[in-house]
Image 1 (cartoon, rainbow, N blue to C red):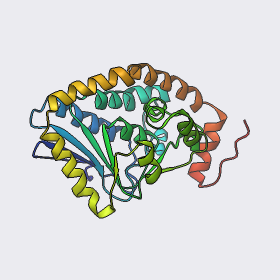
Image 2 (image 1 turned 30 degrees about the vertical axis):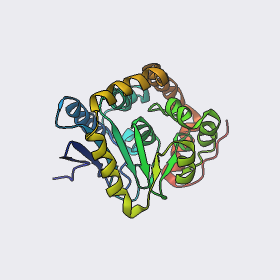
Image 3 (image 1 turned 180 degrees about the vertical axis):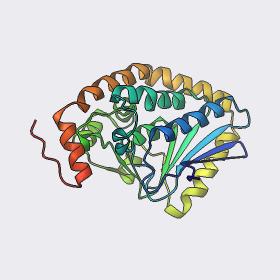
Length: 258
């Protein structure tokens, strides 16, 4: 039997979901579907009052497993996003329970969108946030184009996207991308303490606050997700992506011509 890619545990009102797909916790469609299912169940389960999303290993997640696109059923990038990350991000934002992410290492691409869709984020000094899409000649998706500028500002988001430069933990804390940075050995306990504190709080009122935040800051989230899927489909057919993906798989620097 294959190992579970997401571990689930409920204790004291806290649902802990742990990404567990060595070595990079990269998402494939079954793993995304599993996370969607856990979120759907959490929305209906009165015993779940807060969620803690974390990961095993040195990386939080490398994002989408790009090797999936060469296997099995062929989906366009637009179809892939409409089936996987777009509904997942909407689920996270529409879940009227607080979600906390504990980030112990790099997170990139689609998993950056997942981290940004959480309400709060705690990291260690090793936490890094990489937009990543430009590294293989693609545009941002998974609501990164909306949520990253809303957190750190348009100029910083453009720099991180265009140069594919990691945002380190110190910068992330100063810019509001992280709510706290703690030592590696303290992350598990601190993130649990925060999640338990959330579970003991007025979760119903937090749900209304989350509605308010969505209305005030992310009112066009569905529209942006749909437009990202549109532009990503175009980018996926371009020469930049073909070269970027080939370079990634061949472990070399890409040579973009246009």
